Amino acid sequence: MPALRQWLDGEYPRLESEGKSALVSCFVTFNEAYFRSDYTLALDSLPILAELIDALDERLWRVVIGYYAASANLHWLGYLSTALDLTTQAVIESSRGRLNIPGLYARELMLYAWLETDRVGYSQAVGDVVGEMKEVALPGDLPARFKLVEAYALAALGNGEKARSLALEALPRFDWPWPHREMLQAAALAWVGRWEDSQRLYRSAAEGFDREAMFLDRNAALLAAADMMLARTRYRDAAALVEETLPLVEPSINVAHLAESYRLLAESCLGQNDAVGAVGYYDRALGQLAGLGWRRTEAEIALRRLEAYRSLGMQSRPSEWYAACEEARRWLNQLRSTDLYAWLDAIESGRAA
View (cartoon, rainbow, N blue to C red):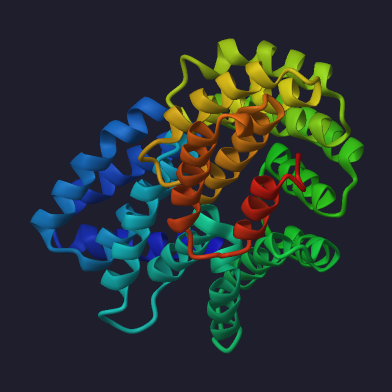
């Protein structure tokens, strides 16, 4: 993150000169732990840093720590709602003064949190914010970062070709380790339906992350590779890969990864006409996601589970079927978007059976 690093490098001498060297020392230790994926040390350091920053009354440093805490909650722990709250607070805090580097990074992460909450519902709003950012002279990697946000928003709306083009335009501006670059390239290939190429890159990224002891990123890459197998209707292979990955995911700190594992196993079961197995895994996925903030994901899982219910003949038991449909509707009612109601209507009428 060149622009943020440059801002930090300018802050360290000021803090030292004002007798706030403890903040510098603590943050440097945290930052090194964060970027080498020392999850325990980094997470343990965050509340200490927050207390120190409050004691020293460093407003923009509150934004910095809010940004990192949000990133850790989203990418390491899987707590999307917490990440959204933290980024929103950081953006509000940063807005009390003139445009600043920490606030811009917080805004970028907030947009990703919006998309993860309901990618279709927030895509237009994300596009509007990115449009505003294009009117501002942004330093370093920030223009490319907002271009990449725009790519994800376009992909959410089904414009895969334009999304991939923007992502590949942005990629050279990032000084990322190679596995992270492969992850972005794999996602961009998935946007245009190149499932096999995407799967290969996800597997390569997973191997790279494993070598670097970046275990949560490795797990994410393996699960994404399994998802690409499902897209190619390789249901048994996808299930085998998820089952191989489960011993890595289950003891990890990322609770959303376990939910994704269950979702993938459910999809594999449904693809092999095992609706009973699918319902069981969908139930486990929804239970794992409860309260984490992944509302769009929850709604889609609820609809897939309803399809499994229909294939099992639940509609022949009207009271149970009505209750199941109403439960799915409650998931949809939490969303900003409305497109999933057509899917629900199709399932209820039997067109999606």
